[in-house]
Length: 84
Image (cartoon, rainbow, N blue to C red):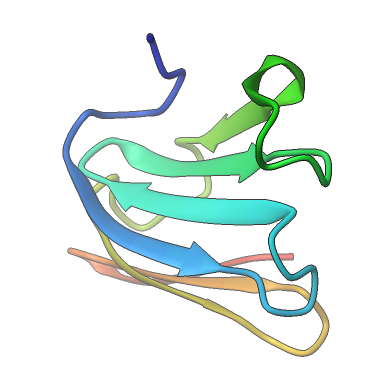
């Protein structure tokens, strides 16, 4: 199966506890990729991947945190970035 993520080298994964299992974030050597399983984790056919490579201090992502307003704090090789 081919995944549409920014890199095959995944460094950080995070589960959005507010959305429970609907959205997952992957930090890679090529940016950030988000998986939305549309509430059906057993059905891969309706999965949607979204990738971000702009707006980051560096494409090498080492940490991801989600704040109470659902903003994403991204720790990269060159500093911290915020994605609202």
